[in-house]
Length: 141
Image 1 (spheres, rainbow, N blue to C red):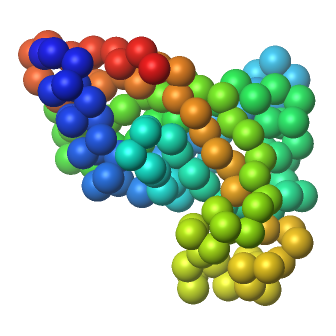
Image 2: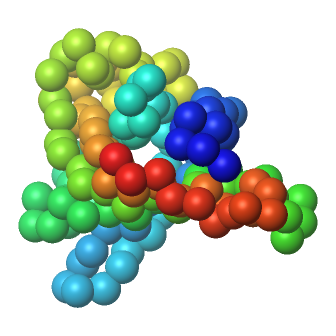
């Protein structure tokens, strides 16, 4: 598959799936948790969190992260993405406003809550898995 086809398939999975796992590094060991993700047209992932969480602390110490997203759980052939990247903590109001949903009121008092931050994940490589006979295929960014 050419790079343009690969980009389209990857973007389709990113657009259709909002829950995945985020792995950080804690004491030289992986630490994973489920997160909700949004994305932009450049394959950047965004996920809201509290600045007092372990993941924020772990990203401060080591920005390398790994995301799994897309698997439906319907069988061995489900397509999904493996994403290697680097995370950055963002607390500017514009990005917090963009990501805000009413469901987040469970954890935050509002868009302006000082505990509310956003993790911005810049992929370095995205591997498309189980999409067809040509996969896995890696998009290097």
